[in-house]
Length: 394
Image 1 (cartoon, rainbow, N blue to C red):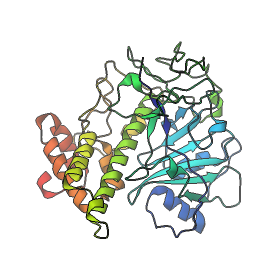
Image 2: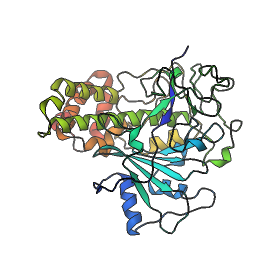
Image 3: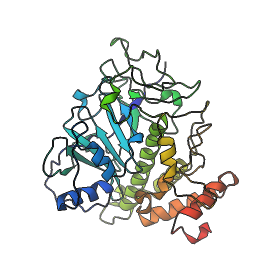
C-alpha cells in the first residue's frame, strides 16, 4: 500500500485579527498594500474574474503558473472539491489563491524578515480595495518552532475532497526529494510523465476504503475537461512542471527562513543559553539548506516529463543568464527537474537577507559543493549572474 501523501499549499489568509503595530515589510504583497492604501495604484474589477487578473498583474505573476488543488484543506474548504478546485498562481516569492465564489483572494509572500506573511483581499467590488494581513489564524497551521511557511503536500481525498486522517496525520509535505509516486494526492495534474505514476487526479470513491483511490484515467492527463468546468478558471490546466517548481521553491524558502530564525536566536543575548541553538544544530541547519539548494537528495526521474501550459517556457525566460546563455531556471525534465544543480531561489531577497553569519556560512558550503567537477557549470552561472558574491568565488 502506498504511504499517505499529497495535497495542500499553505495559502490560507484572513482578515487581520490583532491590533499590534505591524513591522514594515519589504515583500511584494506588503509593497502593493502600501500602494493601494496611498492611492498610488488600484485594482481593476472585471465581472467574470473580479480583481484576480489585476492582482496577478500587480504582483508580476503569470497565469500559466496555475495549479489546482481539490482537497478540502484551506480556510474556504466548504467551497472546494473535485468540481470546484482552488486555483493557485505564483512567482518566485508570492502566491495567490482563488476559490470559486470565495469571499477572499488568499495571498502569501515569502518575507525576508520572518518567513511567510499571509494576506487577504475581499472578492467583493469596493471603491478602494484593501489588503489585510493575518497574524493569527493562518499561523495555527502554517508555522512551527522556526518560522511561518507555505508548502505543497499530499493527502488521500474522498469523493468530496475531504482528506482522510491516517495514523493521525492529515498530510505529508512533498518536494524534489519525495518519490514521484507519493506526490500530489488531492491535486489535479496535467502533463505527461511516461511510466511514472502519481497520486493526483484521483479520490477514494468508497468512504470505508479511503486509501483505495480511483485511478482510472488519472495518469498522463493533458486535459481536465472531463473533471470539472474548466471555463471557470483563467487556464484549463494544472501544469505538472509548475507544480514541481512550486513545491521545490516553497521548501527552499522555508529552509532559508528556518536557518535565519535559528541564527537570530543564537545571537540573542536575552535568550537563556539553554534556549539558544547549539553550534552542532546550526551547522546541521546550514548543511540541510545547502543540500537542498544543490539538489543533493533529488529523486531522479524514471521517465521524461512535459507540461501542457506555457509555464516551462515563460519561467525559464525570466533569467538571468550567463554569457553562454545558461540559466539556473533552465529545465532538464529528462532525469531531473532543473538542468543545473543549484536552485534559482538564491536570487531571492529571502536568501540575500538571511542573518549575515548564516549567509556567510551558506556561501562557504555552497562554494565547496559547487567546486566539485560535476557542479562547475552551476558555479560558473552563479559567478556570472549573482552580484556581491564573496571574493573567494572568483
